[in-house]
Image (cartoon, rainbow, N blue to C red; front, side):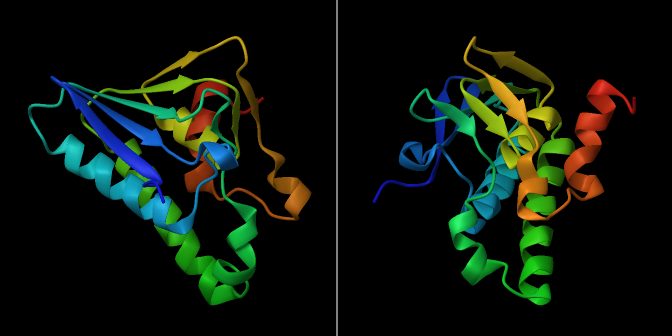
Amino acid sequence: MAEPLLVERAGDIATVVLNRPDKLNALTKPMWRMLGESVAALAADDAVRCIVLRGAGGKAFSPGNDISEFATERSNPAQARDYGKLMHAALAALRDCRTPTVAAIEGICVGGGMEIAALCDLRICGRSSRFGAPIKNLGLVMAYPEIGALIDLVGRT
């Protein structure tokens, strides 16, 4: 099985690849942990001048969380809190990253994928890019650490 998150280096540019193209790069609990750890490590490396985040496969940046794991990873309040803490830690690593970040977006960029992209310093979008927050369809809401960057970008009205 391929690694779900890859870190590639080309000189002083690092690329973090969400690598589940068969699932449109839907994020799993381990991917959130890996994302936070990878961004923090790259930010601490003075040789890295830019971090690019992208999805594998060309069809999607990310549709957000892989809801197929919710039954086992977010089925009770304690699990939901733990999952949220992991997500928020990864988002905080992006928010606090001192190295410039670029989201290279093709295709679907919704939910958690949009949250990641919103926290990047720059977003470069292909013609196929689509954005949204379909979390309401699951009967859930976005916490402020998840929606704050989007509010900062587009405003409150």
